[in-house]
Image (cartoon, rainbow, N blue to C red; front, side, top):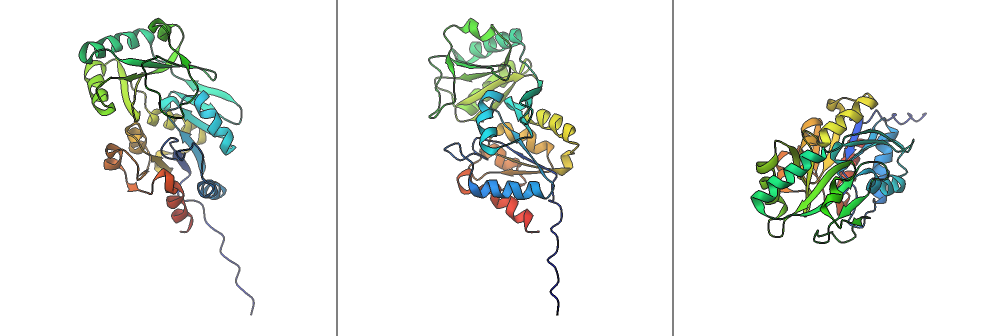
Length: 276
């Protein structure tokens, strides 16, 4: 008796897989596990596109794109930048009005006192300048010293990072929104990372722009993240998956909780979908 051929796997249930980087796709050592790589490749082989959606600016994202051999689009800078990895060029970039940024900082400091600053400049080669009192994290990404606050406003910028000597990131984020939420968008994107962005900017905005270029709808999108800055992305996508290490605010709005970024949480979800 002849053996029946194995059924051909159908298309992946989602046409777009949007993944945050830090705390989500990347392990603590900034690598992507072989298991997660394999799961992403398998999903893409069945018709899905993988889109990186990160708070990192393009220069800080490039090493990860190279690590993955990523040739598609990446949404960077909290949605400010859409970058084509295969063509090595910026497709869109939104900058923060520097006069509004100056006014927003003045209002926030009037409310909570002096802030430590860092600034992410615009462009594929845009530098990040960091004030001496700004607390950089272990394994920090490349930056240059910010010697004078006027350097913040010397060139086009995508966003500002702010820190307070006593307030934690959630408290500082709330205070910044209360003081200057009509001038800039404020998001919390990691431990000790509060960002001031162009008003109305979010990961969802950048994700929607990239999805239109790919001809994909929100209803066809699966998103992974770990921090409050991923909340707009989850609201836009059909299904939002929070990592087990995710911030409580994101967990509260997620459709699903998976394993942590150290335990291949993305692969856990993709493997279940691939097995359908």
